[in-house]
Each structure stands twice: as structure tokens, then as C-alpha cells.
Amino acid sequence: MSRYREYLESQRRRAFSNTRSLSSGKTASASLLKEVERAIVVLNKLPSFLDAKRREILEKAAEPIVQSAKAKVKVSKKTHYTYQTAKFIKSKRAPKGLGEKKGTYKPGNLRDSIRILKHGKFKRSSDVFVGPFVSRGTGAGTYGGGSKSVSGFYAHWVEFGSAHADKYPYMRPAFEMMKGISLSIIKKEITERVSQFGKKHEI
Image (cartoon, rainbow, N blue to C red; front, side, top):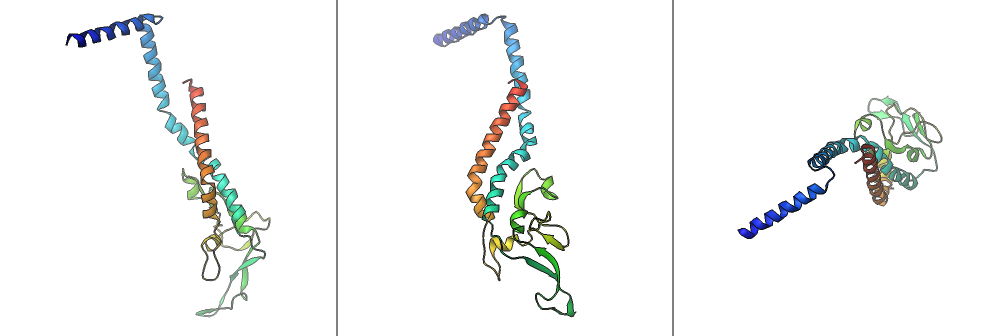
């Protein structure tokens, strides 16, 4: 027991000695404590700071996936059409290709529709989504081929195939190929943001 008391006394003397070595004793200790408390308050703001930068960071990380998908997607060599095919009998439609043309889809339309999605529910989300943009209109008009209008409403048929067409995956391979690069970008961006936060708040 006496050895334990001796140990405590030695630690007390060491602490006292260290305190005396500070420039102003208790005042210096109080100042240090205040600075630590300030740092804690500032660091508590870090999550909200990073959350505000979340979309910006994720959009940078998503860009390699967008570019890879654009490079991988199959581009048709011909123009395709959708039809406003009126029924000439109650239960039957006009033969395929003989109806009134509704939408014109130029080569490259699907490729040009691939992007970071920022409309509607995608815009309101704190997450970032990548894929073909689908027009919310009636489908009438010209899409792709240098036109400002694009609509990849048939994107899933290209990715997964259909009863009438083979599959040509492009989104999944792009993600698998670029996910490592995207993760590296996220880590780099977060590290830089934390550094900027520390310099701004002098911690």
C-alpha cells in the first residue's frame, strides 16, 4: 500500500512540475482547456459541413462511370421510330411500320442520354444516380443526332435484352470497371474537404 501511495505522490509531483513549466500555471491550463473545448465544438460541425458537400463529391466520383457507360453503349447505325398507330378495328392495330410516326430516334441518342440524373426525385435526393435520361413528354419529336432532346426510354432493353433483341450491357460493366476509381475520388475529395475545414477554423 505504501508503494502505491509513493507512486501516486510521484505522479502528483510530476504533474505539478509540468504545470509550473507552463508560462502561467493555472491560467495556461484553463486556456488550453478552453481551446480544446472550442475544437470540439468546431469538429461537431464537420459532419454537417461534409453533408453539404455530399452531392458535389459524389457527382465528381460518378463522372468516370458516366464516361465509361457512354463509351460502352451500343450505337445503332440507323434511325428508329415509334408510331402513333391508330386502331382500325376495336381490337387490332395497323401493321407495324404503317402507322403514323410519332418519335424519331437518331443514332447516338441513347449514348447522349447517359448522365448524372438531376431532375425530379433525383434532384431532391442527397444521393447521386447515373443512367439514361428519359423524357417526360409524349415521345413525339426527334431525339439524338445532335438534337438537344434525348430520351433513353428503351435503355433497359439494350442493357438486359428483350424477346426481340440481344442484350448489350453497358451500365453494369461501366460501374464494375470504374467503381475503384470513383471510390478513390470520394476518399480524395473528403480528405481535401476536411483539410479545408481545419484551415478555415484553425484547428
